Image (cartoon, rainbow, N blue to C red; front, top):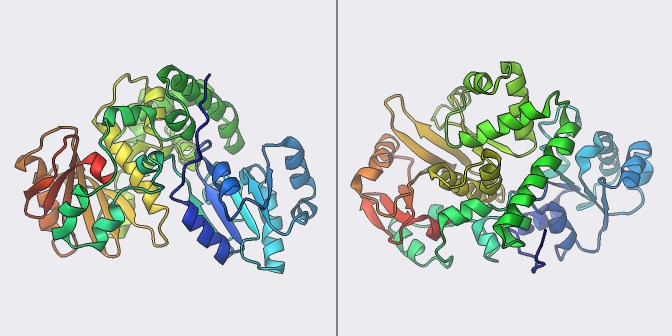
Length: 411
């Protein structure tokens, strides 16, 4: 498999990581395996001289498990990769930073959400800053080191949105191609051959199933787990009905729920909650289902061509990367009424709302914004305006308060 060596790309999370290291004793970078966590913490110019160890090395892992205090005392500042492999090490880190709360003492990375892993009891609350590294955004792939223009849309007046969009530096791109290669650095950036990408996705899926998942929980039948992943990837953008999913895949509801939780803990599955002014109700409504990376989702589902849900998913992953780079992260939600009105994404940030609708059409008209207009009428005191993203080339005001823009001018 040919992998082209190219320059290291700047990452959106680099500056938040620098701030976290300067402020807290522990900085923790989590995210799916192969998103670039090790590269980020090893090659960041402010962190490159730190001692670095990985618990993927069995000798290092044994030392960390058998003598955690001695292991941590080897260097005054340490970067420890794949820390989820040694849950007890977190207890030793807690004791070490309680004895001496020096900013930047430890940087930890993990391929699982440590806050959701049942076998990890120590979360380092009050001692650590948590960050999530998602696959590369489109603008990271372009070398810009950013996510889309979401922050700017909140910071400027609605009347200036069109100028912001038309001045965007990111070039046009085929959304179907962008969905196909996704954002994992190796297939998206270092590989140009589609066949090589498929081999990489196959290897990733096998490693994930045979090794990573086994670290979190016992899987009785890997074929069942793989079948559930495929079913999820075929349902991108749909409401998650766990009972129906379990029945279709041939699993008990409890097993399906456990498998879904594992997928979420390991940053594969994304459950998008519903927007409601009542925050409690957000948790009681069915979430929508998405995946962490469109390229991997297409491989797992076996779909040869991208569809509308993949464009939605592409935009969602950009939103998630932006969300997790902010000190005060926004909430990313969807909206649906009992009468059938639906908006793909609702961004809630600083007490304001930005509804976003996604269309694969190259030309959009007034009727395509009807659900956005319904939302704006319902929440006129909170909403900034509406955004309708399409696959064409024109940016224009579609109706009062609704801007139509090419997806590539925003993402």
